[in-house]
Length: 289
Image 1 (spheres, one colour):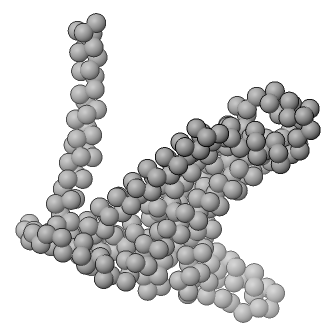
Image 2 (tube, rainbow, N blue to C red):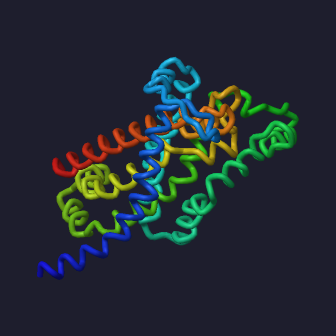
């Protein structure tokens, strides 16, 4: 058995080597670069310690990107899960056209976030935008929907919610279909209403599905990138940037690779902390219920 265990362990070696080469090594290099002043292409890096990290505390644009990232991550996650759960409860019942409704709700996730951003840009753009053409048909003036940063953040959040709500629906639908009807029927016999059955039977049994959906949406929302690039490119005046898009602008536009690496490490730590906290919270809820 010991020889067999040693032989089986050998199969892990290729995977471990790949992880070390493509994950651990780049991460360690990024940590080192974050401690240097570097433009991204020069062969020389000037070691400056934690100056890049100290600069982050005085960067007002980074603060805006940080707040936007929380909005994209937390608000989108709440909306996606509420809409996804509601849609799952709706399509879980039997009615004509059930499968069609499922496909329509799930369809947006089949489109790349980058492409979705470009599609919505042509809806919201000032010149010849679809929404402004509709307003013009009713004799109303055109509106520059993306001129204000707050509107841009709102549209990005709504688009991200709409695109990934169908993914939550599939997760919740799978969880609902694994709930035995015996519990529901027993509650009905005891006189429990619809809300009571949902509160005390359906919701506790959906905790594993809720955990999966929330974690996937939360991590995806906190590292949102391509949808912002294609819709607003972080504008106007850096007001719709997320941490990841601001990192991109600092690295490639401002040529501050060291500062961008510091932002990347900070974003990684933030996402890891939020993910661990959320996962532990749902684990406790699962035990309590």
